[in-house]
Length: 294
Ligand code: NDP
Image (cartoon, rainbow, N blue to C red):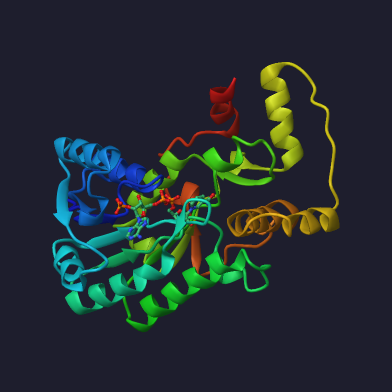
């Protein structure tokens, strides 16, 4: 019988993290969730963690301020998935993962580490604009530490979270329902085909230009929308008037929507594509996703 890895999810109460916990439980993994004392009486988080426990997850006490607690936590499992925050409008803690990399190296038992990536492949963003490039630069610092420590890994390139990008109806690219991202991620953790590779999630029906997304919405609402456009230079100039967090986020939109950085390359030998590896997952199409906004 196939043995499923024991999984520790860090950042399990987060926007993506909670979906990873649910997907891991749904796919029958023994699932451990880091319970940080710093959450105190953040009652939403406390209740979410208790809900996970009721569904069979194990809560493990640990903190990024207590290195030994991280070592002890990772010793309990085979696979560690980190979904720590990495969006400036919420919180950006990507480099905290360097402690985790050290803990995984010291513990020595982890068969695979999936760091908090879940977006654009940072290895392809060496020419990204300031200040938004901080996201890619920080994620590359973590990758370097993982690879130098010789920790087996899978990087998940999840493209556009549908909630962020389709909700606003304004981008072309590759759109993926966050619950599908979580399902593909958990599928990948015990799969030798994804070991030391980047898993790109490119559901073929969800690779759409902005115009096509608008057409999907027009079909759903039964009317044509009025459209206006903005030049690249005007868009970039308008960035300078925004606060730092907005500049970071809109810089990413520029790379995705104007440069098409998610779909303008072949995956190549260091990557694999999720919907080809796991055709059994019936992913949510853009049209089905957008019906929620009707
Ligand atoms: P969240 O902002 O929801 O935060 C996730 C978790 O990080 C929190 O719930 C918390 O978990 C933990 N955390 C936050 N601050 C700290 C801290 N100071 N110390 C320790 N832990 C902390 O993250 P997201 O789900 O939005 O982001 C996860 C990943 O997804 C990131 O890498 C991000 O860049 C990427 N992303 C990609 C998008 C896309 O469109 N492709 C869009 C949005 C995000 P807990 O309290 O449970 O420990």
